[in-house]
Image (cartoon, rainbow, N blue to C red; front, side, top):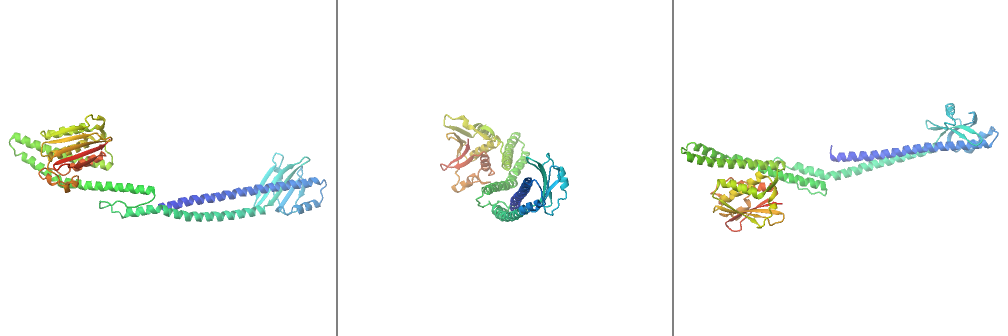
Length: 455
């Protein structure tokens, strides 16, 4: 069922049901009040009649006529019977209205049971026991409350008109409000229906609304679209990378290993084999890093622990020096009196170490001299920065915006081997740690990669 119809049905049924119930309660309460009030009037008339009887010590044939004429306009269609203490009839009104069960009512009346009321069709029958200072009496009255029923019918008609009017108004207002409330949702659904989800990238939803919940939903949807597009791009690039970029290195690696079998010199054979082992490890680390990043991006959660940045960096330098023992990294801390607490951040050791390794490898690959500087800056209050500085052939100004793109390799990289993924993966890893990585070239042959982490 559509939301519009649910709102219309739920609200209308609720309000109309309450209106009908309220009208019914009012009608029933008034009906009870009419009956109770009429019974009291019957009792008052019985008491009045008994007082008239008590004034006359001798009853005559004319007493009934006199009393009926005196009270003929009190009730419509009434019959009254009054009995003395011996339950003998002493007065009967002249109306022809029968009370068929008066004897049973009379038998039930007693000083202990002074009030009986019975409904016979639309007639109200009451039996009462009354006493005064001289005597006591039994009386039965049967009458039709024409005036009360007339008011009850009028009230019923008024309530029916009011209930019908309210129901129609509620249906109209609910229909209007449900259309107004659901229109933004319908518009949103129409926009979503127009989106082509089969061919990424998916365009974000451009829809403005004054409804907070819908705007929040649209913003979250656009965030999802952005992440989906990124995931599609990453998937496409990863597949392209594995199918094209990694295919060649693996083929070369296999070829080199096959060539290694033809080498007869044991020493040369071992050196050649050691080089292929290093290449295989690098390739495996790249694939592993890709999988870890994909896993973190897919479930939105990256396992992290409190770690020291400098210790992860030192381990990365130690690992890379095993491969490039002649390359030197000079490390500086600013300020000299460094607050070591700033070195602790929430991080994933495996991924962050891989990011450091990628940047260190980049320093080695694009340095003219076997030396690079690393500056750890803790002067900022809520941030810590690590700058990797090396000297080498400059990157052209027009190429600098693309250095973090997939498989991009500038003209200065033609003489070095690589897959064009190191900086891309490093940026993704730093972003997963809510940090940032930037490139700058303060002098023509100076390369500076700065990693910034929020504390």
